[in-house]
Amino acid sequence: DTVLDVRDLVKHYAVTKGAVFRRRAGTVRAVDGISFDIVAGETLGLVGESGCGKSTTLMEILDLAMPSGGSVAVLGKDVATLTAKERKAIRRDLQVVFQDPMAALDPRMPVGDIIAEPMRVHGHSAGAIERRVPELLGLVGLRPEHADRYPAEFSGGQRQRIGIARALALEPKLVVLDEPVSALDVSIQAGVINLLDELKAKLGLSYLFVAHDLSVVRHIADRVAVMYLGKVVEIGDVRTVFEAP
Ligand code: ADP
Ligand code: ADP
Image: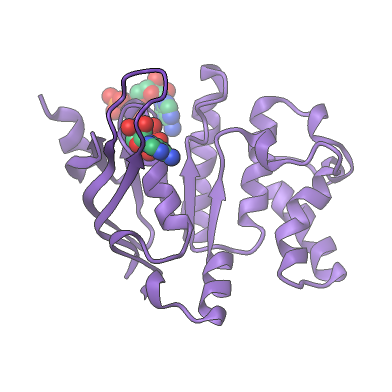
């Protein structure tokens, strides 16, 4: 079962001539014909240094619109040909955990409301939400009474756990982890990565784990795709990629 299939994906940006700096007009080949897939239950690490094209790749996937080149299929459906109903289902089944937990957490909302927001948007009843929020808090190692507190009352690691709980609210199948520990102290990164790994096994998730640092995905990825200048220059089993000279 393939949950994500990216084929020959291309995204070029047109750049205009610099008014002050002598930048020539032309195109930036941000993503230059990359292919990779994720099978159900798998974690694929997408890694590479800043500027290699990771964010552009994510945008093309999360847009759920026809890419400027190549194709993207999510949960077996080519995103270029989705019906409105299929698009809504994919918006539920594909969730994102962001690098900066605060970017996804409205500081004026109690944590329980933040976690419940995707459920409200998708029309779940107040009763279902009240039952589900304590369960979600428990899944990420927080307590039911945390639902009444505000994001500012939590540490960086706890805030990222809140972001993870929110991403899991609708029982997604594929979760995009966009640098999920890069904004956290090194001392707490392993705890969050281990939690993500446990949740994947327990809930039968699949992950696309994006990181600029290969070592971050070492303990969690099954396979790794390494990007460089818009291309996937290496893809394979995590051990093989690590042992490469
Ligand atoms: P990463 O996420 O790996 O840091 P990006 O996808 O952000 O890489 O960027 C890939 C390349 O595309 C870089 O050279 C970047 O400067 C360029 N780029 C990204 N966004 C734009 C844009 N909106 N216009 C022009 N160039 C862009
Ligand atoms: P190796 O890296 O040789 O395969 P281990 O997998 O046992 O060895 O882990 C090496 C180090 O990484 C140990 O200090 C371990 O505590 C730490 N570690 C274990 N799990 C994780 C994780 N999920 N994220 C980051 N570091 C971890």
